[in-house]
Length: 508
Ligand code: MSP
Image (cartoon, rainbow, N blue to C red):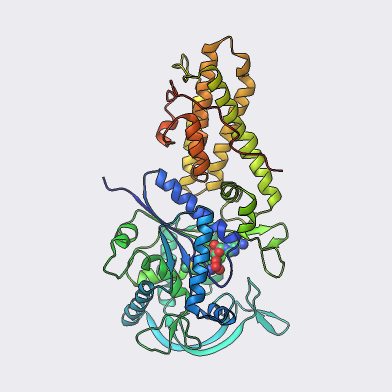
């Protein structure tokens, strides 16, 4: 049987600075969804990387007194080290300065020039070097006689230069129709409305895609004065990494053209590039479209959005030094509703760790494993009666969890797992198994219910805490946590359970 495929990407981050926890949040979401699909039997590919060209990076390299290539190589290594420290594994680390990527971009440029989707013209307008973004007069924000970026507030410079343009206007009605007929193309749906009112309704303007005033970029074949402007270069990475237009294009065929699902994780501020420019580029190349562009909100601190000037940028290593990496990833995956901004503080992280993990699930596991290992050292006997309420709770939790995750509602799915765990702790309080030592038959049945419940919670949590759930598997004497086995209620007969040390320590 041919496996279903799932290809998920993070934005490729600019190496102009260190990564902060906002980037970690984005990458964590992608990684968790990959883990979920893998568990569902999909063949998966996960891409992250670095977006290495542009004026800002060239000037950073100059400041550091090294070549841009050396500068980006150092930074790309730092990015990879961070993902290794967080135990976030991926299939591709895409770098736009790689030879393969550059060749693909040059090739695409020529194809689009030949098909008259690209033309040479004059560009005059505003540009934000910090954001590597062109802005129209309408978008530029005037403040005390100077113009600024409407979102980031970075200063804008006026540029006037000859440039190649990508036709967008000509494809606007195609795009609008595509959005209408593919309701899950952009999630959350509110993003579609924003993009319509901010861009489509005003009429798309053709996009300037080359520059002549700096040279740290991909040079096109047709005109050596021009380098490709960052977004055409950057977006293309999603297919160049798969081998598009190369001799070795097997992954491109399997995961893109014939792939089942393709998801781009993006922050809301870059949804425009992915929802407008990228589909038009693919359309003009006669390539298939991604299934979904999943736009998330920002991670903010109690002082507001992280920024250097506010001094509230959180370095991921400050957290890694203090907390279990799975606690950090659990916080990002479980506490933020995708699409909305979410607050992060260490205080909140500790509260969530203590409430959900230490007091709730950890406690459930240690109480249960202690009782089983004490009273049934060789494992439980067969069940003599099934508890319909517990079995229904487990079945229902499974259905809800899968439904949420299939809609990429990670936090809602994890909430289902934690609520089941809470329910099971309530069941312990109600049945007081420590008082059942004279009635081993009832105790045996109660413990089956608890183990079945714990198995289910662990199955649902493993997409974000694979290492901790590995420990749970060991304690429970089982090899795998699968959705199929969640609703088999006889799986703990004669399975030896180990008394466990606390799975999560309480944080002060
Ligand atoms: N290089 C482009 C992306 C090209 S993709 C073809 C870029 N890079 S970036 O370094 O600025 O990273 C932007 C991404 O970082 C956002 O889309 C988002 O995923 C993430 N975040 C940056 N700050 C963030 C927060 N404070 N909170 C959450 N995510 C944030 O744009």
